[in-house]
Length: 134
Image (cartoon, rainbow, N blue to C red):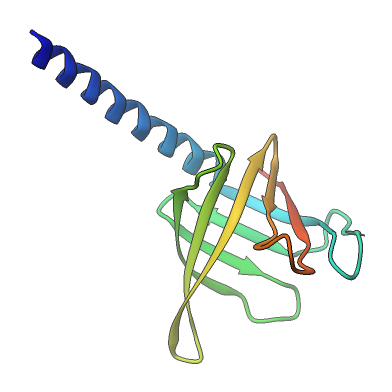
């Protein structure tokens, strides 16, 4: 009986973990526009709606990054849990100059905001905030 209870509990935990992962991915899917860069040497910079700097996460783990006047970048992305319960690790894969590249960023999703967190508190790196468009 003890073995059956443990197996039930283990299965329940695995199922609940999967649901949390899916909901975070669902929260990320959609178009996001750059709104603010805070901290770092430049201080706080506010970007107005319609600036055109767009991150578009598509539900098949594809993404597209658009900066007006520059070639767009696209590829695939992965989301992973981190030790901080509110943060996620976003890995984006793309090709630059014919070579595969991977960038890893810690992000946080908060009520219509996608926040890229500084990679280290020691450095002069700002947090960057995007607002959901759809």
